[in-house]
Length: 309
Ligand code: NAP
Ligand code: GLV
Image (cartoon, rainbow, N blue to C red; front, side):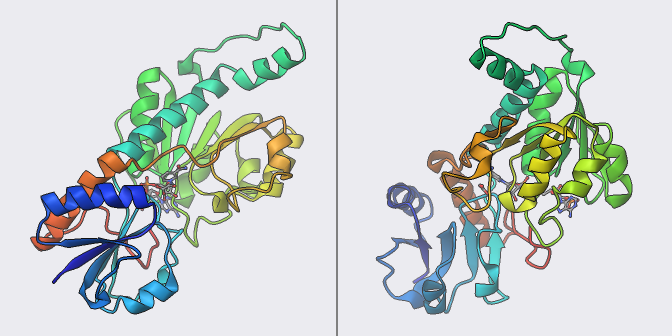
């Protein structure tokens, strides 16, 4: 018998069990803690890994991440032959694109400035710029960076993109690699981080990067808290090098209630809700991948474990 094991949110497990059992009847869908004979389990669905469970799954072949990112899974716990697949699904991409548009428009139209003035009883109009007069840069041109650009470009922004290898994205002028990073950064009024968290990108949103940005530019971090050096951000905001920061992610999550980010007047914090895996849509991505797997075809979203994304 070949089985797939779901871990995490029990409500999602019940829904996915019903749908996967109907759509892929060749597989026995099990929900933790009812794992049955662990030797049957070839596929695992998880957001994070439990080492005690992994040790029992001696025939595991593929790990399906609940999220688009895989850094929250400690992949060193998995034998090297186990393939890892990130979640690519319309729920995450659509909610992420909406969030990025919301934060970009809020910064573009000076909402933080007007909210602060409102609290102080101040009525003070500022010059209003056209969206075409604002340059927005997206770091990371994968599924989510591209979805963000597809939402931002029709709003009229001048959009730039940056990634490791040269990309061709409709609606954006693209830059690649360290050699073109300064040319990208120096033009942006708003920089959006949508990079995966890897050994190369950890701590990348730091004092050095902020100094290379335009003075008075703003940051939107919707990737991972580990990309950001928190003290460097506070210093850049307090010194006026950066104007505002929208942060959807933090390290650790949740931040302690007395963390300075909550009260900082130039920081806007949301609790990791930018791009959300929807149980009703993600299950169809899973089903499609399980069908590919059973047909011996390549999986959508397979991670290069050496590269980390
Ligand atoms: P993806 O499809 O794997 O795309 C990754 C992109 O980043 C690619 O364009 C890649 O360039 C680029 N990249 C990776 N390492 C780089 C480096 N060192 N320098 C320059 N570019 C680099 O990832 P995705 O699906 O768009 O997701 C991105 C991240 O968003 C996830 O990993 C996760 O951390 C985060 N996320 C956050 C939320 C939230 O709610 N806040 C929700 C979902 C996901 P190449 O293609 O050239 O290698
Ligand atoms: C959420 O953060 C994800 O990686 O999907």
